[in-house]
Length: 246
Image (cartoon, rainbow, N blue to C red; front, side):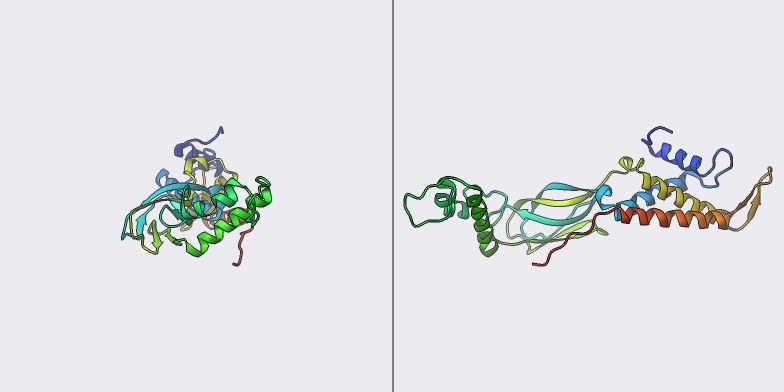
């Protein structure tokens, strides 16, 4: 089969990989739709590198409002608003004016020598931005964000005291159609299809006209094994989580 581009093609793929048309697969299209939807959700939860991607959202926050609806996103980890010292509009900010003479015009570390002007060096550049960051840490207004994936809401603390615009750095869920051809997404969906198919057949042991016996319990067990293997592979391929203690 060529590249899977639609939901209908993915359903056909799952039927073929479970034996259709040689044998009948007792799972209808509405059930396959749900299996595919569940598969995508499972992959997005465990496959952070390919199931989600970093996105930047221009965000308007209103004075006195701390909670906002942001559907379609997996989680938020940072926000920078235009209010306060060194926000997203840093040009002509207090820290910019304070350090312009020493770090921008001269391009050097602070010196008591009036004519000290060696030009901009990498060391001077690093020292300037370290100093700017320290000013921001000590005098800027800090905001934290908390994203509730179940409600799809973003909470800002402290509550903005005036209307502000900012940038939210978030992980957005990858669209389902771009995951249909992922090897582990297909494997996971095949396993989930077998699991449900075996569950449907579980009440009876069916014998086909050609003498083939369909054992629902065996099909279900095989599906559960495939699902477990697929999730282990998805998790195993993820990069280690980075963290630091400040």
